[in-house]
Length: 115
Length: 113
Image (cartoon, rainbow over all chains, first blue to last red; front, side, top):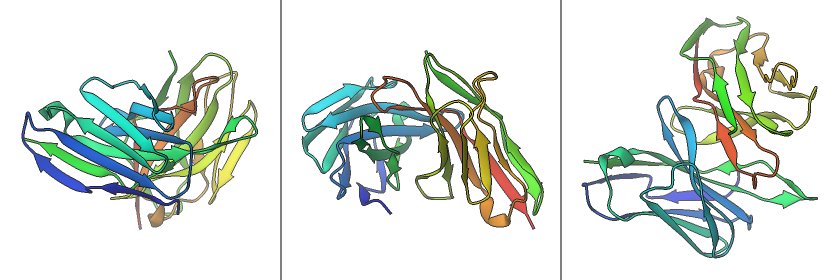
């Protein structure tokens, strides 16, 4: 299994509080991604990173920010959590070779509940 | 923009039945196509992939063929087992899209003994 961990694995918080989720990898992969999984929507990309301090927005980035200060860690922050951000959050990593992107490996997920 | 549509679930089958999960896509250029599987309480795992038209991806008895003429990538298995019970996601990686994946909504499969 690819070395990806997410923390915390479960979190319950209240509306308006800040929340930070952490993704940590030991594979030295260049690309990292944050997705959210909701019933009927599959997985949707929130933000992604193509290197240290290089990040970009995905499909559903409003209300989220990210940071990547070192290769192995990619942080997702909800500045002021809302109930619509209750979801399961997955981190993924990938690399490239020969000019092509390799498969994405997924972490175990973080279940976030915003009351 | 690019999108993926999967057949709705849940799909309930008896053990040893034939499985088809339909997946169609909309994309410009030449996307790569994937099937991921998610077992209960776990993250997603790549099941199979195809990177160009007419390619057939296969793994663990599952197969899918990249059909550009019908923009489809249907997942099939000849004889399902109880252990195949999971949620299956079809996904595409668009050409020149920075490695990002676009997922279908997922199809839950339940296999009964």
